[in-house]
Image (tube, rainbow, N blue to C red; front, side, top):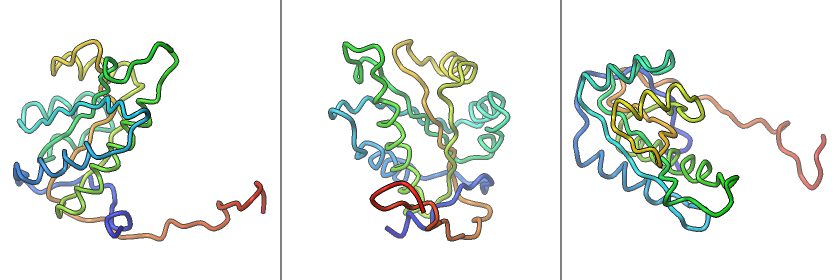
Amino acid sequence: MQAIFERRSVRNFLPKPVEAEKVERILRAGFEAPSAHNRRPWEFLVVTEREDLKAIADMSPYAKMCAGAGAVIALCANLKLGASPDPGDTWWVQDLSAATENILLQIVDEGLGGVWLGWYPDEGRVRAFASRFGIPGHSIPFSLVALGYPAKIPSRKDRFYPEKVHYGVWGP
């Protein structure tokens, strides 16, 4: 539970690689996420090469921190794994969100910092990333998590707002 309260978006990283063992534990946490109908439609791409990290940084004005990250994990929705007969079935969005949060929490437990980058539904970002990294057409880059050793950890703030909690019925 402590990782939930310690987690903050870290956007500045030390120039230090992230150990493979830590990356594997982070990925394992992503695989443990809950999933609608237990479809588990996620697949992960780990990017560590500096040239590739810089390319990701250029794909979005909100991804500049990727250039200095130790790694980026792309969470992709494999629609073949999460597909259903209903074309409006988008439960995979929730599945991939849960996996992203699990990854962010494990990053804290590993003594690292990270930040969630929304990729889907921005078509330009999705296309650019898929093209650069050979993502097949049945998979959608949903989110990216830039991670590494934090240069600075943002201070903790209490984010509980009782006025936003309703019991029984909506209202004060």
